[in-house]
Length: 274
Image (cartoon, rainbow, N blue to C red; front, side):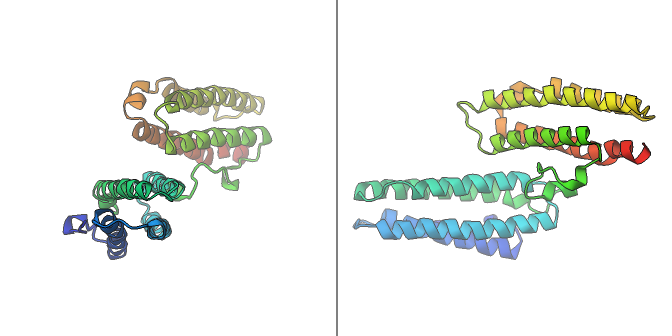
């Protein structure tokens, strides 16, 4: 049996209680896989997978809501890990388990996955909940990459291009969450190059607009634009190849954070003054 020991407690009663229940579900599967007499476990296995998925959905919602409330900086990474877990459980549910031997294999694989994931996730991620400096407000959104009305500057050309930049970052973010080691690297490199090329085009259009209205702040804008382009042109692809998801997550958080702050506190001044 797998014990929910004191070292698995993170000190938040609600989350600890829900983790304890996830261990209870794990042990239901463990009892079946270690029973000497193996009967047809079709319905029991289906019930365990269903209970696991439903309870994980509830637990992850509670955990993410708590992290959003305290603006925990691990929230974005946690969402990605939670999505991976639920997709993995769904994959178990899609396997044909009519055959008794196949049932045993699925049970064994399920127990192995649950034990490994729960211990590593709790001890490697959940244990840090509430112990790091808080996130900026935009990062706690369900989808930080969504372009909302608060980012509109009131210039159709610029707003349209900002919307497209958000769309490219969103596609990159989705790729990171579902990273595939076989084809993922090439796809990520492709979308980062697309982001760089479109950003260069956008900055050129924005600077031409500012010149057309004789905007006083254009020199500061050009310096900011050049610094951002330099960041895109000097991405450490070796780091991405060696540690793709962590390196890409940090990169996308930086790029999106820069873009949001630049729009809210720099670009909006263009229409405020003009």
